[in-house]
Amino acid sequence: MIGMPISDLPERILIIGSPSRPLVQSALRGGYRVGAIDHYADFDLCSMVDKLIRVQSPLDAFTIGQELVDKGEYECMVAGGWLGVESSILNHTPNFELPYNIPYKYAEKIVDKKNLQKTLKKMNIPHPKEFREENVEYPAVVKPRVGAGGKDVVVVRNDNELSLSLERFEKNEVDYIIQEYVGGRDASVSLVVSKEEAKIVALNEQLIGTDFLHAHNMEYSGNITPLEQCVPTTVLSTIERMCIGMGLLGSCGVDIVVGKEKWWVIEVNPRFQGSIDTVDLSLNISLFDWHMKSFHNLHLPECSYNSVWARGIYYSPVNIRISSSLSEKLKEMWKKGVVRDVPQEGETYNEGDPFMSITVKGKRRDETIAKLREVASQVDEMLKRKFEKL
Image (cartoon, rainbow, N blue to C red; front, side, top):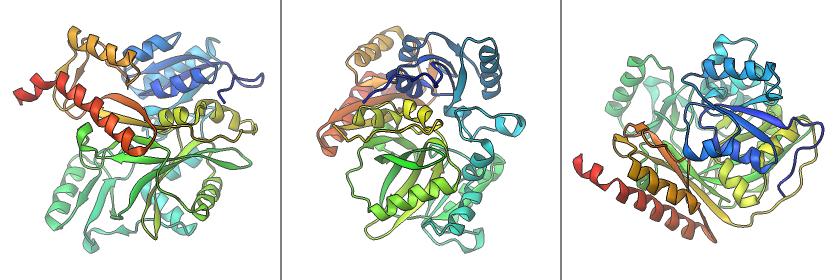
């Protein structure tokens, strides 16, 4: 199922954003030559690309990347990670349009959660209702108006928790939105959208706030592909029509909650998603290649799941500097294929920072979760002395 680029597609791609490793790995699976501009220089990322440039800001990534394309070292840039549409760089770069990314004029309306609420209401798509501060019904969810990955998203259960949450947002001068809390299975729909059609590629379970991965509150902590729970075809066709109506292009995702009798759209992501690893592995495809082909309206083949894969984002439980001995242990785990985004010796991480990814395979969801937990426990054991110091 993994394809090679065809003649009318670029072959030399510069991927900009952070983390870029999942995108780079998918592109390589599709047969592309790849360079990367990233905030990190993870061990496995360095081993994959023909060039890696490390930068501190999205603006630097875009500026340097454009220079490399202008020189002819790469045929085009593709953005992901923190250079996706949530980045404030787009407010300062009016000509920010990449040929293989969704046009910003469509994306900006979707990543603003308050505007998304209005769009979903107009399209008659089920979604959590929005509250004003004076009429909140508990439990409720408070989240940044623009953001990704569940960062700073909290569930509040009373007036005091709401007040404390809003104080933090206002102190940091971050716009927020208050929504109804809806219960059910957290899931995402991975799609590839062309100008002619929207194709659902995979249904994924979302891991949110997973304790054994040390994620806090509602932080996104990974995926399991495929989703174990059945989603009605009427729901899926509605999501396809919605994405076309929103002007999405390429690889995109829709976060949903599936209850016993109802479902809701939580967010729409007009960009590559964190599930790209598990989608690629479970379906044996290159989602990056499918993304590129969708811009040329090329036919995408049918595919089916061949296994259950999980990617867990392991958050650092402590402040830590990667020692030489720890680096070697992590590299050994990487050689076994169970971890990715492996930090280099000398790198430092604060408690709560994304530390690395764990990827495991199973025949069923429960087996896959058990393996994910087992590997996380092994990493915990490596950091045990640090735990004991807290």
